[in-house]
Length: 78
Ligand SMILES: [Zn+2]
Image 1: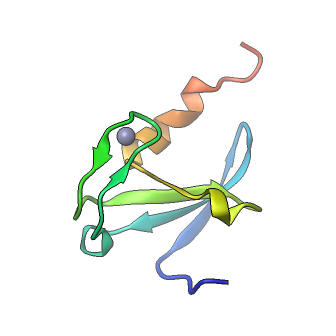
Image 2: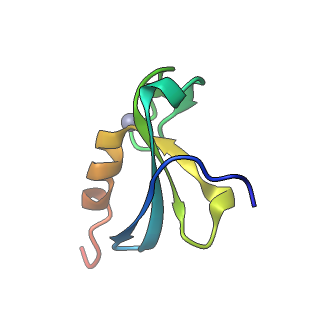
């Protein structure tokens, strides 16, 4: 297992439990593409890294706001 740095929380979403790690601006040294809005997350931008609790290989970097909004786009039973 890789070393875990920073605080992680578990969030229950409509599609399961997700581990959410908050990345500070100081720790965000690379540029990522947010799967929520398809825009870049620029270096030094505080954001989150999320993955299904049993699939760390699927972790993705999200804008904090995009992650917060994500659940509204996958309303179950719609
Ligand atoms: Zn985004």
